[in-house]
View 1 (cartoon, rainbow over the protein chains, first blue to last red):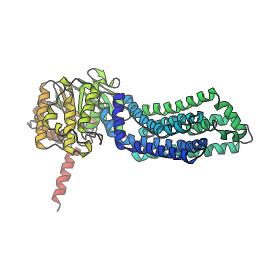
View 2 (view 1 turned 90 degrees about the vertical axis):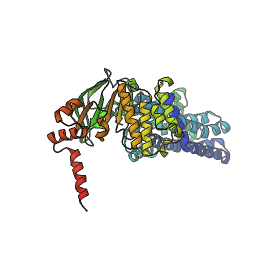
View 3 (view 1 turned 45 degrees about the horizontal axis):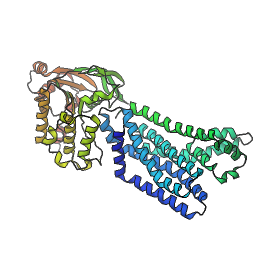
View 4 (view 1 turned 180 degrees about the horizontal axis):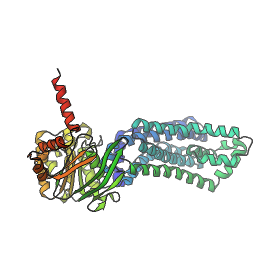
Length: 255
Length: 255
């Protein structure tokens, strides 16, 4: 598997997009840490970057890469290699390059300026979100033959998770505000990895004190070891499930 | 070597393959003939596992193909339109293929690589190549691993007369080594000297599979092209192929 991934990685490095992405993240993180006097404030600003930009770039880059390497996939499918191996090498190649870009762009500044529990939580979330949205993008790309439609689906998914979902949750909370919803919102957070990541990091910050009763309940849960386990578990499901679905579709696909 | 049983494939409205049954054994050179869109390429891609049939089964060397992909190690495939990763150089492409197939250097057949003079342009990226050079690369790749089964989809299309002759010579040589060679082509004069069997497809149906001697005897024609034309005229007047030829001639008459 690694053998094929090597060629995928090589191809990605040639396109230089990933280098620009790394430099962008690096500039943003360094300037945030320089501008803000308080490091935890910088982390808060960085949090928004990680929650919005990282999923977006992961999705767009992955879908475009998939369609661009269609020839490569066509070529290796006629070779003695199984389809799942081909897709998994593609996945590991893309995921590896996006992860290393993230760790170089955000990881190094965070470790330099704010080596704390919050900082590590931020890195963990960013890495998990990269993998999750790479999986989701593969699912979108594999199921749509048409390039425009594939990228459209990927963008819609991103919109849903980054913007629409929050609106839906707010609507539910408003209409059922008479009832105790704390446990229920905990469940809702599992349905959106971006939200889950946000809660996971926010509760490690001082700002969580401002969030009232729900915040206290959350802090109780996410602050504990069970909370970390829960977050990791849910994130893992979000990585594996779309990838498995994509594999199933890819295996039955006509090329 | 290849056994096809009740193979069916449907693309939305089009019945690409309709109950194909065939048996190809080693030492045969089988010509796949039929009008455009008659299912030749679909049949070839089904054998390679690139297209998944709706029903029916294909056996290569007695084993059904939808399990282990290892059987493709014994097949050399030259696609109709060779599509390769743009950034990859010819040399890299060959080294990658060797890497995937894990073939020892001594068993490789570099004949075409040398004859087509591809070694001298090993550092050229694939995107800069002309259509004909791509075809040469595809041909060299198909023969490189000395496979027992060769599947060539329109091998001479786009090749200059000299290269086309070289390729035909190569096919003749391989035929003598008791290999199974499947060729699809519209240039019947090319096939004349090579072929031992003819399989004729039309609208996804297999009209006949005969050896060339029988075909010549039945039609009383010596040339393959004339023999096929006679068969088509005798059976199916509506044959698309002839219609197309007539249409072109008709349009030439107009000022």
